[in-house]
Image (cartoon, rainbow over all chains, first blue to last red; front, side):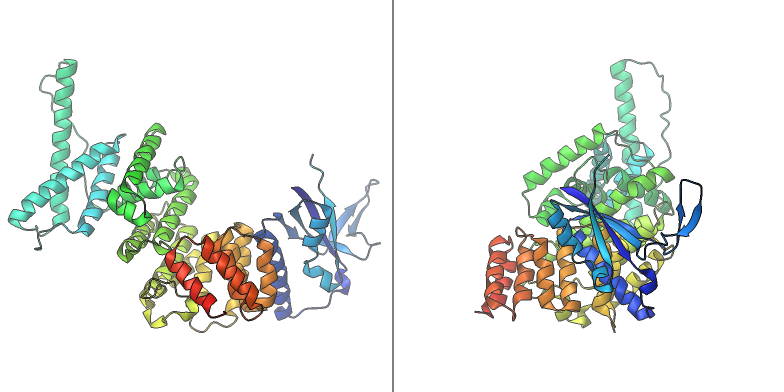
Length: 113
Length: 407
């Protein structure tokens, strides 16, 4: 089986403010989904969420507040799944709750070092 | 029978204590020496007590006899060695370490013995058998009864397991901090499996089942009472065992069928054990650590909670977290059941079918349950597969009943 990196992207600024109840419901959706992947034995690494802010470093020594200001969407988290093919990996990603929240999932096959 | 008889309880308890203390005090590599002395001690007890009655403090009586028998053993050994090897040790007084059977020594010795026996060089089945024999004083026959296995098979398994331990440098000594921390997870796993062997056992004799659960809890309590092993995980496992045990009488009906939690007679639940479980659960969460035992104990807690608001949401979330720590078919199937309670049977069917655990009777039983009322034809097909795959006649009967309602 191959491994695929799932990168979750969304526009933080466009995300609606959530009440504590909504946040909890959101967490539950993510947990239900990722645990479902784990239940199938297809989760290689749960991964992590990322904080919304960051730094971007350029070759000329310039450090700017990031993530990339020129792109609206930023990475909010990642996981690694196991699948036989891109199709199978995409099918797994299809259940990700971010797709119903205006975000997207990038699926990339990992090329082991 | 009169009161003179040695109760199985006294035998099991004291036999394993004597063996542990002797092994640790004399650093015995051959546990059989201690076992012979303990067996001799009980033989003498049964002879003497039959004539004179049981002494006021039977345990103290046994310890005194065990001490004397140990001294005799070492005296014989030294005589033998001097004669055979013709060494000249003229009438030298045999110096033996003090044999002490006070509470603390017993507790320390038993802890050391738990760590010596729950050694991952042996398979978990072999470890459980060893634990039952050496730590719990069960006879080979009783172990065979608990495992529904032939006595001969258990005997062989134990012999092999003992040999493996000896070759691994068997030593009954108090582990240091690092050793305790390194070995504790496999010790807990063995006790967890020992408990489950009792709790989920299909053995017809319910007393044996309950004994296994009680023994697992007794050994775990030894770990809790020792600062070396009194961790949040130990408390979490204890909480889990308390919650499970509290329902042991309610989970099986008169026909030996397993009763679902929601259908159980709650007045049959042991409230004292539930409260004990609550206390351990609070201790378990004190330092913020989370292990699979924490999650399983929390799930068991939610099942016993009196007024559970969002009960199934919480249970589902715990199962989600559990699967992220350790994915197993049983946990995955239980999770789908909780998923069905939260999101309805229809969406749970898709969730279940993704698992594709077609070799497991429980997988088909769950799908039979979920399809009931949605697609009865599918439900019947799955119930039939579950019946074909199940190894338990009681379970087959129970599944057939559920299927008969659909036809």
